[in-house]
Length: 429
Image (tube, rainbow, N blue to C red; front, side):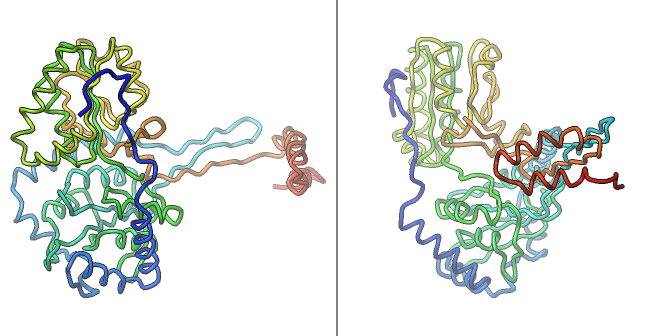
């Protein structure tokens, strides 16, 4: 872990995503699924997941989904339903309404908003299953009005074709319409191009390993994708009023995600910096995922000291973190200085996991510094927008000369004539 002046720190980010061999492997898998369909899905599931499936077993049966409810705790279902209600209520406020501006001269301009017809969600099955990510991906799509949502997730490795019951329950509660037991790059290719068992979608969302991320990048264009997500990040901007126990706990909440996760404290208080470093050592020792968290802190963790909170805000804007906590005497006073952050948590009781699970805002956030230009997953991500243009003869007469001038300046004579021909002769209804 780097501990010292912010001037000497630079968070190294990936500039090349995936090795040449990984990209080549993904290209082969995507091509095979596009060419062979279900046969390739079954072959790769047997080869990579060690699970033999018949074609009819790719789709998860309704009986298996119903049985999953008996395998999870009632308190999990209650918490899941409350979280879903909070997430839905938050995203309802993002809904768009079709609008039109009708003018006295007969011109009508506007926008029409329509939901995507079909969305695919990838749910990983590796180091941890994340039912909360199911809610965060599916519920904005449901609020947007998407009628078909298909979930893909790998079967349990080692011969069992079962799916984590917590994932099945979360998907059922969120309103997923189809679930399939297939993972990896092959699942992304199936969603993008379709097979006999899995119809193609319009957009693919959800996190995954490097092969899933590379596959999403490979199929982008044939379908839309949410993003190429990087490892999780948290930055904490704190002064000497912050409790070092809180700061360390929140840094570790991200460090335990992944060995490449980043946790950074920015503070003008040398006393706090030293106390947080000691707390990190104390708290990490008892974590079940200790090795992951320690590796994350060693390689991508930092405690940065700055002259004051103003300089701290500048550092935060350069980092553009996925999650930002402001734990200062007056966090609202600093809010206006923050330009780049995926989600902002204000005050000592707004711990990052509050947003991860329960409060309502989406936890699918820009990573790798992309908060400089991108936003959390939201209802807009599942909408198509069409512009409306209706001109009257009166309006066309007014604007024709200007339109023709611009068209001819660009060497597009047919464009100019397409306007002018409408003004020849009498008016047409």
